[in-house]
Length: 199
Image (cartoon, rainbow, N blue to C red; front, top):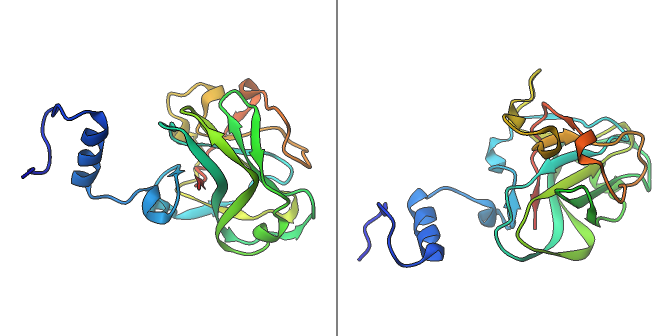
């Protein structure tokens, strides 16, 4: 019989230690919602903000600890876009060094309605342990307002991070497609803590 919470460092190996710690915690995680990972618990979404039309929004995921196949990007559209430009709306996946690894087909339709979105990539990406970013590009008269936990005059969500390692950031502007590479030292930290996930 195992008594929870487990105190100290049992010698059963780190995978079991991690599982026991999660069980003792009792909280919800991305797997409970059919996702591989997310930026934070989706229940923490409390407001929304729209990215600037044509500007790439970058959202860092927590460190991916094992090899996984990523097939989709998840977002929550709180308010639908209007006047979307067909063929110029995408989501994608980038490495921490700014290389595009995968992207969706045009998702103008997804952005034109509100609600939970799980948008398929054009091909699965075989991710190895490391840091990844979800990228969102919206081109519309009024871009979609994406769910987020906070919005303020400060960039507190990027506390103690170098610009190129921001959790929430804006990338290059005046884009009609997701660029093959993004210069990470040139991104701008954002005050909008946009929620995103992967599946």
